[in-house]
Length: 275
Image (cartoon, rainbow, N blue to C red; front, top):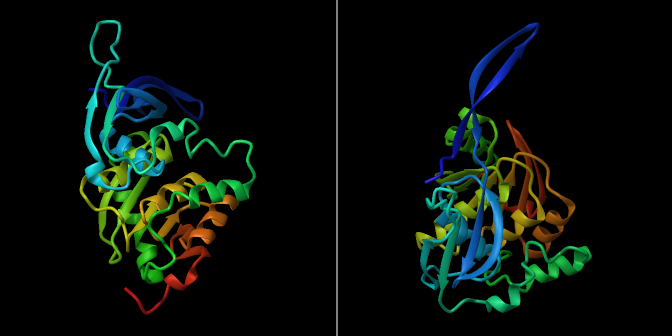
């Protein structure tokens, strides 16, 4: 199977000096996702935890919301010039899908193109089956401040490449349950949510999701469809991500660094006397 990293020769410049040396790069390969043998989408990803990625993607598209609906995942087709399996095609068998596949020819993650922000938020809200505004989760600022270091310590491939995003799923007490890396931040989130689905943990009531980059509309959508009431990012959120979080009652935290953060929505969940 494909590796998460590849080695390449580089010329390292340092001042006026140069030297040839090996370097580790984050691998990036296409993954075709099929449902019932029918092509659904293609995403560029770092190989590894592919079944989790596919499972999480299906959750984020509103196609699956219970583990028992995903009855099988398998690698299929896709061969290289030597006839070897590339492991770049995964077919999912879905039973009792929450929404018929035929209605997802324009996927939720891409159907917003050309639509206004209000229409985009409404499209996602219609697929939410787990109200987030009533989730009783509360956490302390001190707990939030500890999360980035915990996620950073779990980024093993980032240590060697410096070129991967990460996502981590935490309990309300700050325990890291699952961390995943990928060249695409959305893929890292899908891998985490897919792991939770396959472990029978959805909906993720009372959990926190931390991402290593910015918080986009797409990541907020994925967190909401998985039932996660708090999404935190080490960088900035987009305006539409804030709009969606506010609409759904999801707590959105940005610029989570050191002993500081910005809380954009539902700040009542961040209370100093909870840990």
